[in-house]
Amino acid sequence: MSRIVYVNGEYLPEEEAKVSVFDRGFLFADGVYEVTSVLGGKLIDFEGHKIRLQRSLDALDMSAPEAMDDLLEIHRELVARNEIVDGLVYLQVTRGAPSDRDFAFPGDDVKPTLVLFTQSKPGLAESPVAKVGIKVISIEDIRWGRRDIKTVQLLYPSMGKMMAKKAGADDAWMVEDGAVTEGTSNNAYIVKGNKIITRGLSNDILHGITRAAVLRFAREAQMEVEERDFSIAEAKEADEAFITSASTFVMPVVSVDGVELGDGKPGRVAPRLREIYLEESLKTAI
Ligand code: PMP
Image (cartoon, helix red, strand yellow):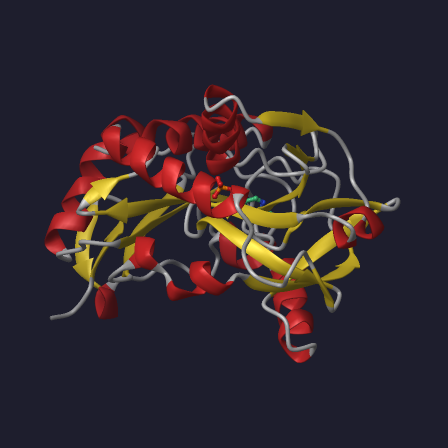
């Protein structure tokens, strides 16, 4: 069975799903995206992702696609048509395809491009990696200044992942002015004693939907949360560390730049938060 993809109002087999070579997403990375996870055929935190999509569009003065009000229905239709039990729905909106390449934004006659596709990941929540944790390295954060907008400019994060791979690690934490901003595709946390420490929200990081939920659940469980900058030196001294994202949920980090945290195994807090996050977000999955 061919995967069914949504492109501008149509559900098409992936071989037939196409966008113009003049699409501004392709030529200028002039697009934004969202990734929503699917567990047991249901969407996790859908509303949060939709709200952030609107925020990204507004920040770039990009029109919302006509189908904005139908996004839930489109997500559900794709999940059903592709028989996704566990996996992801990827959504991308671009500023559309004008008739020629031009740095200036096109007029209102050019409609945004809307593409959605699914990725099947059976057993997503029972990831064996979460049992052993991941290793991260640190790299300099040389991205642009509006990382709070979820744009498709992902070349540097992609390079960061490759730097990590080359170093025998799984991911990279980016560092600016001595402080960790975030992971290549996730938010970063350390745990010291009973305190969960993560950088505060600003234009320097993506406002993770998983981050918001995890911090809320942590506070509800009477865990102490401190939103502040931390350095790689502090991370190396931490009791444990973890990352969050829509596709990894809460994932323990067991080493930073080759230095093992604690006994080099996932600690107490990250696995517990993963459990709580999965349990609570499944309750509101739609
Ligand atoms: N930071 C960056 C740079 C990301 O790419 C992502 C994932 N898209 C996140 C954080 C985590 O965000 P979320 O929890 O909404 O997936």
